[in-house]
Length: 154
Image (cartoon, rainbow, N blue to C red):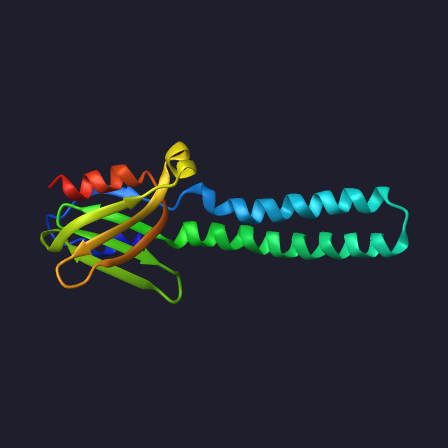
């Protein structure tokens, strides 16, 4: 059961469910491709000192890339970004949970930052500013403009 389903108030409905974009996997994938390239070069080069360096690079990049894939998957799996008709709820973590909630009537503005790549692949960072204090930046979320529209279209 999702976190939002456990904390909904009577009569409250979820209007939008956001998630982290798949782009969070890219750094780990680049490391894994580097490991593969180093491993291929290791099999083709016959100089012993260079071979050992390539083997070290392949193992290190493979280990770090594999860990990065697991971390990105875990972060996507444990992060919930929801907009209800009354509030915005952001939750990360499984055992050590971090949650932030803001009532819709406290939202002053919603800022969306997208790079060129973010615009092409539909991801970006969202900053929600509220009275007093805002929600921390929501980084690399998918469909940030849809998220903003659901927050501002009350």
